[in-house]
Amino acid sequence: MVASAVHRGVAFELRSLRILQAHLSMSLQRVGGKADGGVDLQGWWWLPSRTADAEHPRRVRVLAQCKAEKKKMGPNYVREMEGVMSRQRTDAAVALLISESAFTAATLLRANSSSVPFFLLHFPAEGDGAINAAFWNPALAGESGILGGEIDIRWEREPSGGGGRPGLWYKGERLRSLIPPLASVPESTTGLIEDL
Image (cartoon, rainbow, N blue to C red):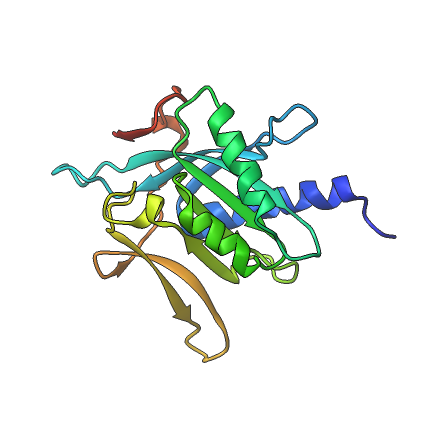
């Protein structure tokens, strides 16, 4: 039996949530539905603090779109997400575009030139925890971007020599999950970036 487009989309959103939490220190919730305003997932990206109090992570607001399509992702999806970001009432910081198919070169060029902080991720259909590619633009990762040039994407090889995946690195070390226990997560969901 072939899954409907809606079922396939919801399954991809749920798989994306698991991957983002397990590998990228993001705690997001599913929003998707008919009146989602173009947002499938929203929540926080927990990153190292930029203050002297390095024990408490800072959180960065994330709004995400998940696309479970077979064709390559064109630049129209970047333009669509730019529109979503401009309509949000909250000060959303990062536009996360997650695709089950690869991104075209034109898509990467469009995201790279955008003033919106973009993080593009390719999670292929096969493999539950697979991250096939990761790309972010200067508005996110550059010296004057949200990450301030402090976090890198590096390709991590499997110890067995077979394959690998992108990983986040901070000051020469693999970035571990900084998601706080649920009880300590502030209830406020407004704001751009916070040091807790």
